[in-house]
Every structure is written in structure tokens, then in C-alpha cells.
Length: 242
Image (cartoon, rainbow, N blue to C red; front, side):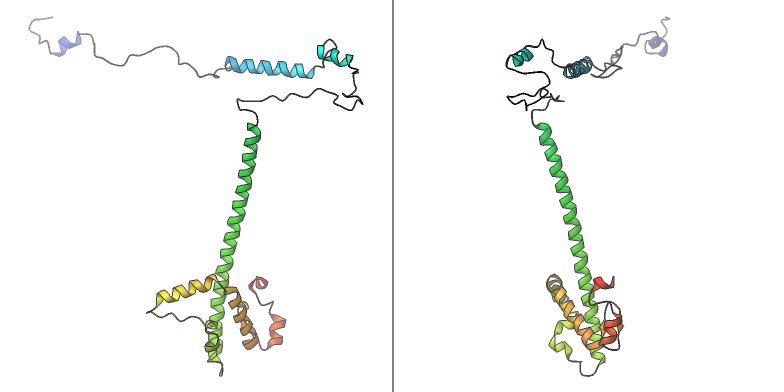
């Protein structure tokens, strides 16, 4: 290197090895998780082998050299007959049911019971939700029909001489007149009426309309007389007109 070269110049720095600290690079292959690979872990292979051996052992009849079998023969047991004095007992040994997993005894039955309970609760919740929506629909429909009946009653009463004072007998036969000064009282009254008695009120107003004016709110028609109403109107409720 020339003495005239600056020790901080690029020429000097290129000749120096890079000794800056950094992350060390590790070689080798990544360790796989248990169970990865073609054959799985050793424990899984061992479980498969043990299960197959157990299935073969359970399918094989008990040999006559078995100590338990010899004890049964000494007590009078004969091959092909049931246990007991009368021979009405079991013909084969009690089967063995293999348990999977590490759960304790009764866990599987408990889990199944919890699932069944959740399904019942889900079905019950869906049924209650549908019933609630149906009740809301019926209430809205009754409220709308009552309002329609009140408007029709007011219009027909005021159109006929002698029935102008009908509103004084049953004030709710006509729609409630909402004034600008008392909007809150009208809303409270409407909410109270919608919660109780709307079905009965609707029945009374429609009965009055049919008997006095020969009018059906669901047909939207004023008939000539009661006979004409009975012959051409399906009935006195909304369900019949659907």
C-alpha cells in the first residue's frame, strides 16, 4: 500500500476484512414436529401396532389351555353353553371397548350430554325467537287494522246524519286527534293502547262497522245490506281474508 494513501479511503477499507457484528447463520435442517414425516412419530406407530394386536387377540377364542377356561370346566361349564346353573348366562366374554385419548372415565358421555343440551337450547332459542317475531307481527297488524277501522268509523259516522255524536259514546271508536301542543301525551296513550286491549277494541269496532255501515275493512267495501255482507265477505277477521 502506498504511504500517500489515506487510511480512511476506499482503497484502504477494501483490503480490511468485514468484522462487523451480526446474526450468526446456522446451517442444518429444520427439526420437524412430532408426527411429521411419512410414517409419523414412533409413538403413533406403536399405538397402531398395539391396536392391531389387540384386535387379533380379541377375535381369537379362548383356548382350552387357558387357566380361566380350565376353572370353568371344573365347575361344570361346557363349551357352547351359557354361564350359570341353568345355562342361561353369557355365551361369550364381556367385550372390551378401547378408549381413545387421555380423558377420564365418563368424559365422553359428559361431552355428548353437553352437546345434546346445547342443541336443545339452540332449538329452544330458535323457537322462542320465531314466536317473538310472530307475536310482534300480530301486534303490528292488529294496531294497523285498528287504526284503519277507526278512520273508517269516523268517516262513515260523520257522513250519516244522526251518527255524528257517536264519538261521545265510545271515544276510541274514532282515531285520536293529535294536537301540536300535546304530542307526548298522545304518544303515551297510543303506546298504552297498543300494549293492552287492541284485539278487543278491533273486534268491537269491526262489529260496529259491519252491523251499522255494512262495511268490512279487509274487503275495503261497503255492502248494500247485512245479507249482501254475509254472502260476499269471507269473515270478520284478517286471517280469513289472507
